[in-house]
Image (cartoon, rainbow, N blue to C red):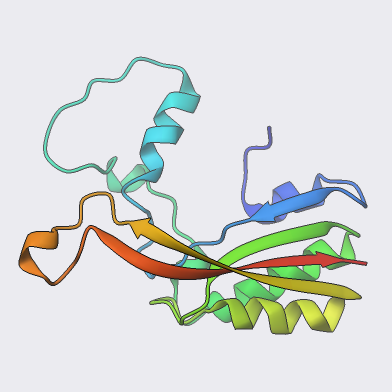
Length: 154
């Protein structure tokens, strides 16, 4: 396991390694759903109390993928660092533009600049908002979603 940002992780890998990337889709800096896995991975007992599903703000890491002003550069840097390291990469991302300004097309464009082979596959699925309120009609709990799987290799 590597503790650190994506750059630290990619730099710790060897040429030919496969990287699976599922970058943030949202302009929200910390998904309220991530903390469950992070809490379990700490292996320590925790007191569950209070309202909401998020840890304290100090424990919510920010991401340049979640800043609309920096998300495109972050995507470019991710793809280029992986390619420069000789890594094979699989990226999943929604086809439609997301609130952070990115879409699968942005990753595919950049990958085609630095990888010899880029293969695309679309996957149609039903996405769960894990708590969306379908009763009000504004935010259904389940949405049809099309994602693209982008496979990159030299």
